[in-house]
Amino acid sequence: MIIENLGGKIAEFGLRIGAIKLNPDNPFQWASGYRMPIYNDNRMFLFYPEMRRTIAQGLAEIIETRGIHPEVVAGTATAGIPHGALLADVLSLPYIYIRDKPKGHGLKNRIEGLDADSDLAGQSVVVIEDLISTGGSSARAVEAVREANGDCNWCLSIFNYGLEKAAEQFEALDPSCNFTSLLTFPVLLETAKAGGFLSDDQIALLADWRVDPFGWGEKNGFPKAT
Image (cartoon, rainbow, N blue to C red):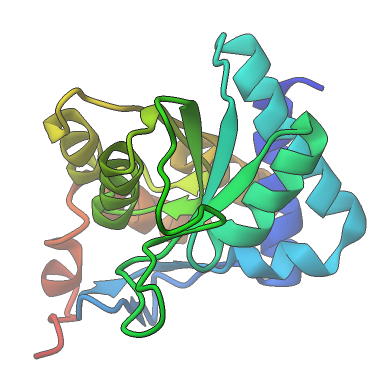
């Protein structure tokens, strides 16, 4: 499997089933309140066995080709949990998942799969996300692994928007953390154009969004919700 070709396959499949939605004419409101012309739901890939396996195998190929040597796979709650578990099965490695914040009851775990009285004992951990947008939650997941005495230098995802803010978040970690994805925004645009999913004008609007994602809505008459 060639990772570069896999990105196009994921994009085409995701656009076809609605896991990736592009609508620059009536943008989606993200949790941040910003109106954005793209919405991504990688959970929808789980419905399709072949795509589930393809994504897991693609992540495994990244690990092999980048010379990453994890001893533990960690999925992020919630959408990264199943894809991380599938990858752990492919690699026959131990698996944990990371909550966004500790539970408010019981043992109050942040990391599930470890005994509350133990830690990762210096083991190498790769974090699996479904999507990297601004990178904040992904960077916090890496920090959680490190706080549990894990050695974490990589975060992998199915898709990332390629926002500079995400790169800044990973670079700000001490030490910084590498990240990469199966599908990138430029490949998504190429696939959407080649497959006739969007007009040339819509593609141009999306390309413009990529240059200034947080100012794009206001410029195009879609102010941030307050």
